Length: 429
Image (cartoon, rainbow, N blue to C red):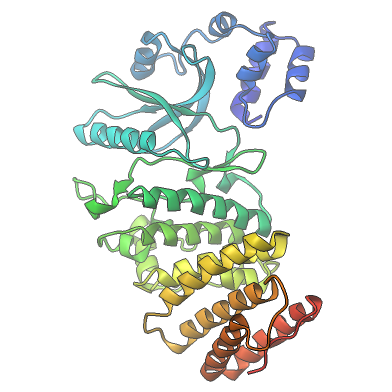
């Protein structure tokens, strides 16, 4: 249970609506992702009428917007889950749908706020993905605007203590949701740990499409000229107010992963302007300066995103390398690894189409060698001397060696170690 549900449980026990024994029994039978109130109702330990009797008034009681919500006669407000610049999100019980919901209520009444709220409603309702919060219903009027969405039991990623593996897996789930949104023509523009909710079973859900835009809009600023997004997770292009495409979300995912592993944002400053100046013109510090326990490979492959690069293909390549790293280390599925290797190799090939300086090209070549290597050692059947994967691996390793013998030597030593464990031998140059 989160803090709000704990307070609700305590109130129900204190008022005598639910006994402590009944509460404990329900908690033992609580399903993953199920709200506490839903569990109590399923067990007949509580009725909707009793719930409304315990929580008759909105919180706070002198809020005219919440009074309007009460007049709808549909929602029982149980507690405040969170709030931001645009509105507040309450844990509520929807008496029509008979389920707990996250009820987002807009706090402003300006025409631009109404348009933004309407846009979030349209975008979120059109996206259907396991890692994007589902919208159930909405109410938009001059008096009040609200969205009833899937209640996610859990905590935002910035409030979770995650291991390196958990951070990589959480960001990989978010990446799948963001990739789906991109395919549907939507860029989020405000990806950050606070907008990624992690449930107790490890499922991550992307929230808050309040400033999302269709890709064809080529959005830069709001109509009022205010830069949108969160400065310390913005891409350099977004911080500079340039036209945006899906690559800005890729950068923000990398910045989010950096924050999860370093326990601090990539850039910090005294003001939003100071942070944006750093984003646009400074290199971020190495992760290992903040978290020496991070594995060197995970550090390099997961979040080595160049803040000064106008090409986010480099960031995208690093991101796929991070996903590949996770699967290589923790998956027993040969098919899954091969499929991910194929996807990563395609991304690496596209990234290498750009004219990079030698260090960046060397990094990309190294990642490509590792992906080719992993696909080669996991291939089915006997390998022939003229195996095309073996030839491709040898050729790519020769290209890497031409860029710098030291990096190639380190990579050969690491791959040989893994190769020996696999009962194979790295093809000679």
